[in-house]
Length: 223
Image (cartoon, rainbow, N blue to C red):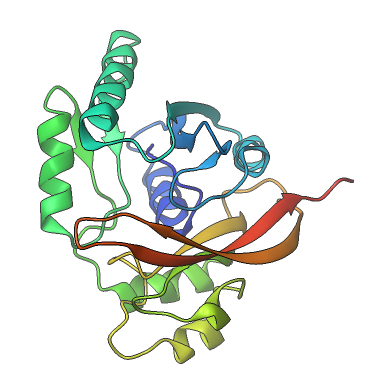
């Protein structure tokens, strides 16, 4: 199960667990080794580990350098996929919804595995309603300033958040509008307790030039 720690991953996993056709053996997450955080989402490793522990599924990581170029990224991913295949893994699960090029890319890179997309082509608004009604709880940890301003970062992912989204924004953030961290729900044995920290701004290079993002820093609450 390709696991980002966010809402699409959580809903995909829940659907797989409810279906009972497959047994999800591992969660696989890309980590920025330099920052010790989930790639793109910028969530601390300790929170990811707490998620996996509460879910009760083993965690595996892909350790990536800070802002790797495409060739380095693909080489590292291919090495990980080969290792998984040699260990007996046969299927890969993704939370993609409607990005055809991304789906095709994944299928091409994992030709020797069966790719499963539990959320594919389901309307985003319907998925978000399902996410909320199932009792999942999440916090928005990253927003892309191309679509959303700073005020959306650090908010709970609820009906109020969805109501306030600009009309041109996909409710699931499928175009990269925002990312989330799921801390409770039907797949968890207990909530992941955290404390909310500062909001920071960062820019990253992209194919269309620099892109700006706001991030909310979360720390694992010590009990």
